[in-house]
Every structure is written in structure tokens, then in C-alpha cells.
Amino acid sequence: MELGTPPKYGTEANALTAHHAAVDVHVFGNRNVNGQRRSNFLLLLFRALSFCFSLAAVVVMGTNKHDVRGTLSKVAWYDYDPYRYVVAVNGIICVYSFLESWLAVWTFVRGSLVLPEAFQVWFDFGHDQGFAYLLFSASSVGVAMAQLLQTSTVSILSSYDCSDAKAFCNQAKVAISLGFGAFFFLALSSCITGLRVARWWLS
Image (tube, rainbow, N blue to C red; front, side, top):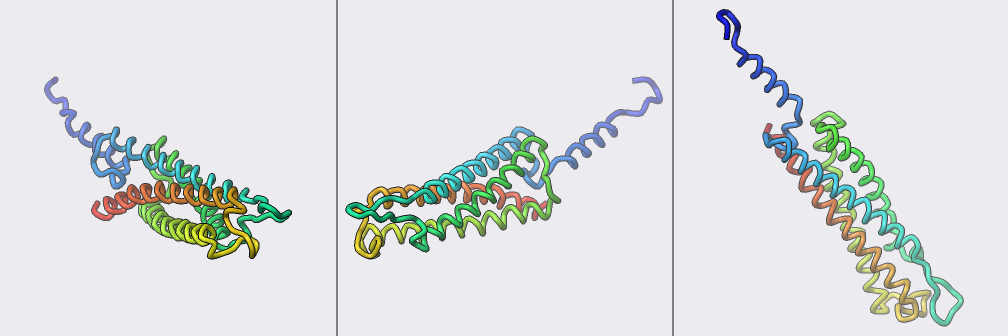
């Protein structure tokens, strides 16, 4: 180093500080970049799986209309209010998960949040919690309805049971199971967004 040339340590320190300021430290603490991308990828994966399972639940339940054995009548999902609730809630979760998947893609690619930090961490966590409880509620109501039909406590078309409409009952159970799958991945997403809130609060 030539005499009179200022040391570069100050410049390098300033550059390092600027780099850390540009990173969403609250999301991942002070972990390295690989850790950040891994956490971003997991959130994106859980969002996408929640979307796929909820969409599948809507499609499977929404197409659940079958003949009743020995009659010319058909039984459909919209004949039962609990199944309507299952379709409605899974539809809401499907839209929400799609939007959150888009935000997760942005975060994964750009390494930053789309919305202001304080708003997005609470928005994600609050909605994840609320929608997870809503989806669990809908799936539980669906299970109760399926059980009532299976045990003939509630009749199909006032006179028949699941032995006369096996395809209908089985397809309803598949849709409800898919709803629980969407709940599982939404709950995992909530764990990650909850960690974001905690780290933001402590930062």
C-alpha cells in the first residue's frame, strides 16, 4: 500500500452493511444465503401443495353426482349443506393459496418481500392461521356428514343409504381427505410465517 492511500477496510465494511440492509434479515435472521433460499423454497412448496390439494378437493367434490341404485334419481354434493361448506371453504383456500404462491415465487426469485415488511409478515401469518382453522372446520364438518351417511343416520333421498350410492359416498370421502391435505400444508406454511413474525418482532 502506498503511503497516504486510505485503507479499504472502511469501504468494505460499508459495502457489507449495505448488503445486509438489502436482505430481509427478519425473514431468516442472520443466516447465510443458502439458508434463506431453502426457507423460501419450502414456503413456496407448501403454498403450491396447499393450492393443489384444495383445488383437487373442489374438483372432486364439485363433480360428485351419482345415480342411486334402483332409481332414476341422482344424489349430488349440493343436496347437503356440510358438503357445500366443504366446497366453499376449499375454493377460498384455493384462491388464497394461489395468490400466496405467486408472492412466494417473487420472494424466492428476488430474495425480498413484495409488500412492506411489517404488513406482509402479519398479513401472511394472520391469514394462514385464520384460513387453516376455517379449513379444518370445514373438513371436520365434512367428516361428520360422511359418517352420518355411512351409518344411515341421515338418509340419501329420504329412503336410501351409502350402500345404494357407494360412488357418491366414496367420492365425498376422497374430497374431504384432500381438504385435510390442504390443511396440513397450510399449517406448515403457518409455521414458517409465524417464525417470520417472531424474528421481525425481535429484530
